[in-house]
Image (cartoon, rainbow, N blue to C red; front, side):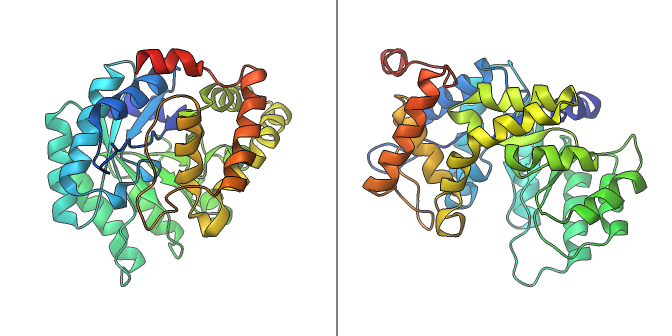
Length: 314
């Protein structure tokens, strides 16, 4: 897929589906593919395979490839599939080549997790990976400490489609966007719906979402409002999402994926628990609270698919 088409897709919602496990704790490709199919059918603009909501760091490289394959199969051409890659530079380059071979549209490099990574060398990591990748790259920036010049160097690379900006350093973001080539990488809000209005006001376009796993209509409604410049409407929807997103931040974000997976299971598609070191399951109190919220969304028509329909299809 051309870098121009990928940049257009990144202006929309980049959904990050969960990874399903079977009763033995192994990746279940059929159910995983069904999760991706649901997100694609809902109309999400760009679908990220094995992102953080997909438990990238809990998967082996071989399991990551299984998830990528399930994503390409489940999406079935309805939207671009951006295959998440990472770890050492050599591993990431191999993952990028594998992703191209199975039909992914682009790759997204996770932030390097080396505890001794220097900011300028992390930019080198992304740029070297973009040089070697046969697919356009989205750089996932989560760390602090970068200069405007370093972010601009990243944004101006000719094989980097976008920068998933996932820190709250809005001063850096607002200075880097006008300093970068306007025809270069798109700056995307990497902190989901809750931060999307603020990032949009700073000049970013599009946002990432784990919410799409269970309530894609709400995510798309936030995007539509921001696309029209209706910040009041976007904030009203974000306010509705607040209990769900606050629940995800419990235990220093340890429940982030847990809440999403339990919501998907509530909808009728059993995707199993989260692998440690994430919180495997919610306790009874939090699960009851989540189910009350989801029943309210279901009654309002915000959850797209009926549980019985999913059970029959699964």
